[in-house]
Image (tube, rainbow, N blue to C red; front, side, top):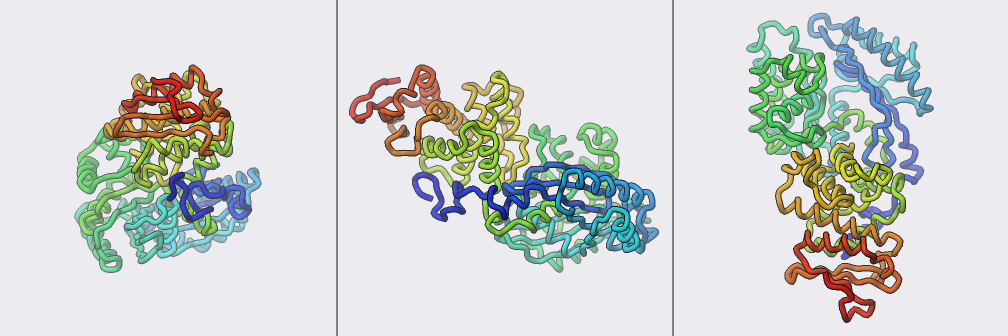
Length: 524
């Protein structure tokens, strides 16, 4: 990475040429996926042109196709009726949206049921949908691809739990390795004879088999699936965690084990109401908790991350050209937002180069958040001025963005809040600030105030060396602003007040240097 923060990789760098107008990406602008699971049937329509997919439409029906299958070997009749009605609706919606043909996949219930092939034929006859019934190995692969959509180059073990099965997949350096499937979906246990002891024996034997196939080298564990997300939501409730965004929520093994005990002892109806979990989902959580307890015991992961991306996102990833897969999902999403919503698209790159001297020695991880903030600094300009700062924070912390953990969300949100507001106190987000330490909080404030000042120069080409530049000496605590004759008229009273606020955040003295660079024109 050079001094301007551009990767040496040219177009593939964080400020490389945009791809969302490339025909190979634009064909992903509306992609419809149907997931026929053992517990739910869902339609998702992605706008996937910008690498970090936007959910254009998302609807789920809890059908319970796999309920009772362990006894009957057949699909639940009520679930079949509900699923068929849902699929007819989804196909009609897709036609109304003028989508390309939907990609429809079915998982464990459809592939295991005696009447699965007949039901598949009935669906195709009534709706015209082509249903791909995938095996457990393929289900594991697609789930792992969904994780890679959000974590490019990730390493670890992906566990995807559905209603009737649980899959594991190994990911290393962005590649998918060993895969395995098991009959450990919570629907399997609802009617199992013998109670908890029988379930524990069954689960232990199944996970022992998975461990033999996958190995148990300690690694991060990525959890995919509604039952895992419900457990994570309960973990948040138990801890009083402020940011209710499940994607990239992290749990330690110790915290997860405490939550599993908490679930075992809890009033499930009260817990369901407190966490906003549906009755159908909550009925499966205790069984999923038993599976997770054994999974943690045997595989001993180094940490746990929740992924909201799974099979459906994996199907989108399948259709992405490699050039799009290789892009940073956060930066691409922010660039797409800037192109769509900013008043002066392209200024974010210039603003980044302007503020970069304030972050000497910053890690690549920090610089990508600085870049993201600069790209997003003006996308909320339509919000009411009195609420613009809070709108920015809310959008950054809750937006569907991949490649962004929770502390990074708060860092980004704070920087954008300070883009429009000097003080962060007095907002409804103060509990969120606890996710950052004092140093990172101060860094986010400096970034926000630098963007707040830099936005005053937006009519000047500040990417040029002779435009407007910062020279920051942290040892001396001295900040120099160099202005050319062209840019000097932009430095008015409001700009000066914003520069003073930035200098205060830096605990610095600020000087505005004459065009010849010899004498300070103003000392603040």
